Image (cartoon, rainbow, N blue to C red):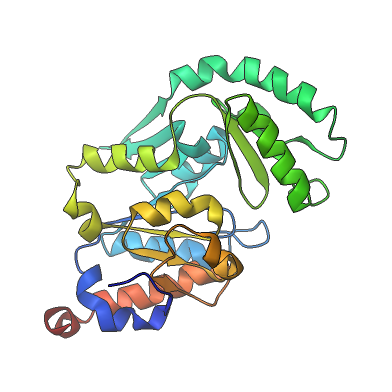
Length: 273
């Protein structure tokens, strides 16, 4: 099936493709949240998916501190935070945390360099949650500071990349880190842990996101969904999402969940489509 944007309601016409999906990897900012808040509809959708046997895995550039909150307060049993630098999970009633120690050891030097860089960008500041990060350094580009222009964001990314630093821009932060971890690598690692490899990834895992920052994940997961805020960026993505919902972050996730669970509850569609 060629890559194209299909309305989320068309999942019913492709029900068999979603039959065996057990893992849903999801972006957080402006995918689960909307305007900085987590709508109750999103929280209910995550709970409904868990009840249906679907493992929801937030994959985010958010700090380890936010990851700790998510794993304790949200209906999820795995969280990938700091772009794969920190993985938190619960298993058999116990809590576990895996930290990319190479990135952690280099964080202090990177933080010092970024602080000197920001002296040339007076409108920018470190993210408010920087003290809760273990592997990354995050620059606020619009969460609690005036919204950065595209030119300023690109200039900062160029400065970081020029120093050999990994850096991506989300809707609110530029996340920077040293090391070889990424959202995709962390997702691969987690699926490998449960022997979901190769073609099984196409059948048993899916992704939902909202921005070009997620292009690597869209490209990796054949089953992908984009929420409305991604629409204006679709031409720039290496692989566009197969399905798209018109609702914005949070509400788009809830709409997607509604259609997916409707598909799963229709055995006849599963056997005939």
